[in-house]
Length: 610
Image (cartoon, rainbow, N blue to C red):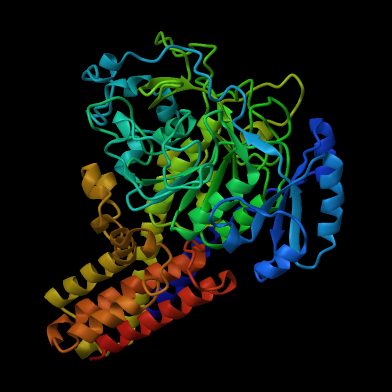
């Protein structure tokens, strides 16, 4: 009876899991040819970006007769170079010859990239510093959390479901790469963790912001929070990786962006934010995004601020979560681009209005450097550049909750997006082209990532455990304390105490390893190296525990429970396709997880018979 019941439960849970965690099909690229975009832009550059094959030798490069200018110190590894010519015609002639060269992978015009219009000009005076260091008025925060005094002006964080979502996760152990103008440690980023980045403008390790845009973006993602100062950030336990690709004027090169994306993917970033772009496709950027996606990195980009129906690059590419901008009343803003490539919307602000009536412009408020000075302040910016980091921050929360595969993260964001109030459109355009799936919702995303995952993993682990118990002869079945040890270990192995947030536990406890299950807990403790670690996401944990403790007979029920719990977590990851396993080809990820779930199940059954 136990075996038949468990089998029915197991098949049902697996089917529900696979359906509810279905993937999101990539949005169509639909990009026009490069020459059409160049003509539309009214420019003919005289500089090329040439991506040579990785196996080309220095001698073969020199034999081509061009002066290959490195983009950065990583050019020799990536074989990505800039070639300058006197005239556009010379560049066009060289491009034609290079495209016929078998040692060349791609040739593109090195068109400049810059911040979008509207993004970086603060059209309102900063909030007075003393105002952002006083205690918040009573009732302005949720049970006193966070205690940042200017959180009351951050309507945009409340629009995406904060602070309630912080009870479910805070992004601990996740690294977010900010590819922008650099990031400076302003006062309200002092408590935020940073990991080493790189300056692709000056080709050195100094990643300070000399503009203000990148620091503002980083603040939305991970501003130091609940520190009785200033404002809050979304994934404030996450780490920031600053990658500077834009200069003090907010402009730079697509080639540098391509190398920054690869740098982030090679240095354990989990999420990349790209609050920049332009109308031109550039092959090395597209390939860098594909490379990052294959390595398990979530890429988020701003749709652009032209107020037209054409999403900018790189947001337009597949494998990128393209973000449109909303304002306080949840309508999309006057400047936000739209189109079928839009995946989701998030607050970008509109500083021309004060819809919430707080006497302040409805921009996005963060602590950043003051343009043209050495000081810092609390400034309102607006733009899809401000919307994208809201989604990047929520993606970091989802990754921190144990969902690491980029497509699975996108599926969580899209499936849980909140539908905005109906908006009429005089032009008759579909609202979905403006919002994508809807407005990003951190609380709903974390409830799916933690609650659904926890319940399904525990259900699958329990079903496997019942199958194992069903094969044990009656006189050998567990009883008393051994039953409780078996059940407790199964729960900790499968899901941990995932219901803690719903039971009113403090946020720090609910977001701790005890609330996530054995595998997610170890990933949390190991940091970025634990996300998708093939040794961790396998039967290794119960095997190692058995190797160490098998000689202690009274612990065998506990070890069996752990094995069945881990098997449930692995089976869930296989059915839902949530984990990207490093060093394992994507096509084999599910097989890896399923085989290891089977091994853990067999180990648990064997232990029950001993």
